[in-house]
Length: 98
Image (cartoon, rainbow, N blue to C red; front, side):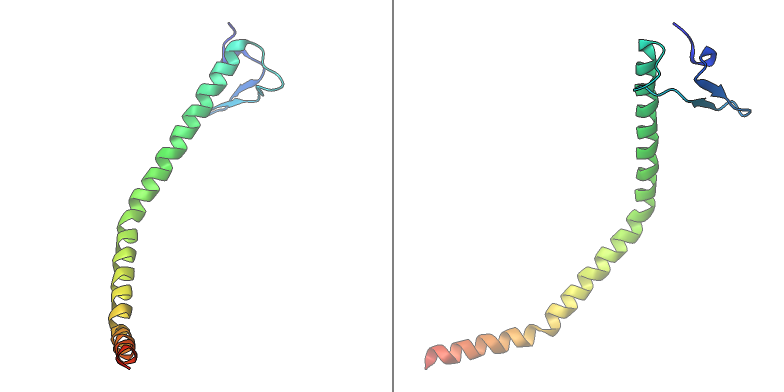
């Protein structure tokens, strides 16, 4: 099996970073290349998920504050309009008595 470092589709940059120019749909040299591509893609997905998870951890306290604020606002609105509901109920009771 040919190693990636020996393949013409792999370039190693000055910092040691590997750049793969192979395309699993066009120019794969060996069947093992597809398995390597799957591992690379899986690693990228995991890295992206971990980054997103860290971002959500930073947002969690702010999200909790927003939920508490919205809950207070909704309760204040309901309390402020409570007299309307009582008045409507009283009107309905008066209509039933007639």
